[in-house]
Length: 346
Image 1 (cartoon, rainbow, N blue to C red):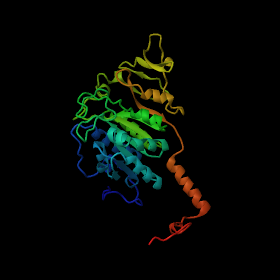
Image 2: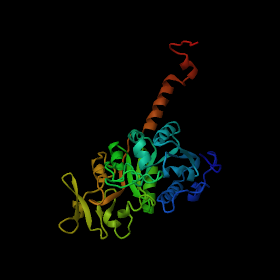
Image 3: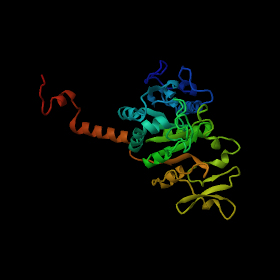
Image 4: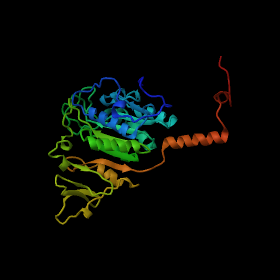
């Protein structure tokens, strides 16, 4: 989709505001849905970066999150179930000057779209994949999803889910994602920071957002949103900083062999004993370890887990094409069709 208000590429871009990225369409999510917060922060990030609207594209699949392109005053594609990474891959390959966002959910991205998702990540296309995780199927009214916890009672699992849930960040790290991050819908300042860093990253940026479904899975992430207790249950990752958490910042994470363990500072333990976060480490093992920390056994990490530089598929593809053209000249489709063995069928 596109709107009539998208500026032409030959016109100057002048101080775009968040409201300039809002389409004139009514936003149709349930009152209280976490998607509203994500939409608001996305518009702020685009304004911070002054991304031209005619050079920005949102691609989505199917689900509540997939309404997103309608609400952005940019170009957008509301595609088919699970295939948004495929369309984004093709789009970025042939139009490398575009900024491309994939908007998906835990069902759309990790169930029917799981295969496409992992290949988009491993190729390291210069695209941004934003996965809204509410641990439920919201659009189809409350069935369990690939991220629903064991024992989850839903309309499709009345006796409790017996499927082991997928950890989206584990998948991303396993596919050698060059940028991996997590935030929470109501942590607006933190969410904006994460989305902006993802947009600035060159290569595939994968962001998981804990997003509350107020109708079918309300409170799924209350451990990380309750103002009184969230400091005890979250760790905000900072590059080259120790893993410290707690209301009094008196707790931390250290390694015991290859296993993380919770410790209290000041009882024979100093900050130097703690695990220090290194988002730029080429070896992803420690980043993967952090993705495995989950509530209630551990405080849940949020922030940037990994940010490294690797060759990008779209850049390499266009480099190969440029080299082929330079060596062999511009292609001629008609000549190609009539080259080699040719026969007529009557």
